[in-house]
Image: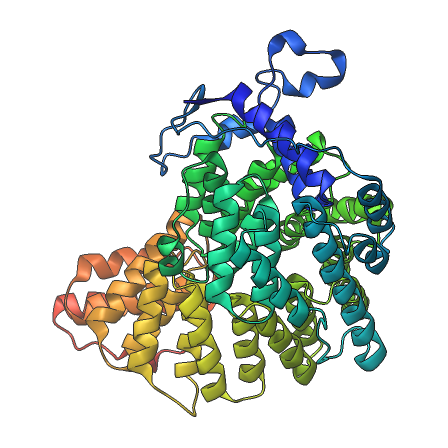
Length: 579
């Protein structure tokens, strides 16, 4: 059994080692998990009352999802104990301290040069890590110099070849530690050798499981559940964090939520777990829950910018202009030159209908991070609103280049080609989006509309798509109405009546009215009258009498027809009566 105190000691030692090797992102992540462990009540002070039991009830509220069957441990994890990370045996030499100072000042080549003749594993790692970052820094400079911050570029990290050669030699001789294996995996991934990269990263995390950067790189290579299942990973609580993240990226949201629910047994107050849970709920379109969770996150961490762009998407979808304005103002004051901040402000201007300003902020986000996927996708949406389809297509294609599994970019491409009157191309891209997100009704509806266009006019295929949309819980009710109309157009009145009845039940349950309800009532009244089911027909006619204007006159004419049919007089066809 791994206890809270054991996890706490492991993380403290890991933070020191990760920081000492300049892996600050991994150290920051570990620090956030450290304070996410429920504290000993005897250590409470007025400054850390947030960690008192019950002060963060939102985590408890959303950790007990009925659909998740994984039991939540109350004291620790039922896993084999993992030895604590050992501290380095020797004290850092003067050259290492100098190199680390250069590294922290972003003078990577100087740091690498200072350690060129050092043989300790820690010095060897920092020597090559600094050289790798020097190559990355030069690559970014070449991108800006040659093509501009948003243009495509063939710039590469020119240090990758020598790094692969030297690290490979060190691995063969066993003169490389888990951190060197992590860097070797990153280099192999950059060079496109994914199989060897996975092997190196797996070896790294098995020997030193506390490096979250290694887990993140490994996740980016797990593009399918088959690849994930083939990984031979040691049993450690960090593996559960990895699996929760990997499941989420593979759109296995129920499994991801189950993992995070399990981890909350120890990390009860982890902001990271709450943010990841909110992301999964967002993908499941539980916007009300997501909004509450992000509000709680901001109360606990008021200067947080990370993940807040997702929160802004929720506020945008709910058209919460005041809340989105407040969030945009808050992140602007906190750190206006973060890509997330620019996206949030862009979302605010988009909601206000100021699409040119929105594009300006999305472009600013891309200047800060050229691979920021959300900015490319959102900018594509803005160009669609501005009817600038060539620019929209370019933005969506750039998003697909960054992440070929991003269904939103594929869907955006489908919409853009649909606007251009090219349904064959649109259909291709909608199919790609459905491949990556098969349970989203909106994608099935979009594909069905393509089949209904004059160029294709494949109504049977459209019906199949609308049926899939109904099975995927079409909350807007578009699919039921379209199924009824398509069956009516094909002369299948029994099927049309079935779907009109289903659509009517949905509208009654949601308290909706409108032309769709009037259309359904007229068809059902006529259908049952023609089949001599006069009682059912009268029920629908009576409902039509509640309307005013032409709807009421239509109901009266139908009732007259029913009376005439019941008394044996010939009835007049419905189309003879004006609506």
